[in-house]
Image (tube, rainbow, N blue to C red; front, side, top):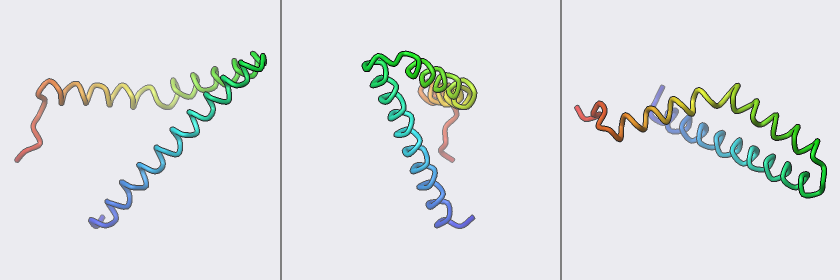
Length: 81
């Protein structure tokens, strides 16, 4: 992979993450709006789906990133040559 492709890939990953974060935030706002309007079943289904998505897809990478940051903070392996 060339340097240009690596930069493009990193930008693509960032855009992918931002778009999905905005979609998740939008779903939470939609669920809260449904709750305010009195539609508790819609709220429960959306929040339950988001919780299921978190456990199924996001929990493992989130835990891995938290552990990685803790290691860096506590003076883990140095990246300098």
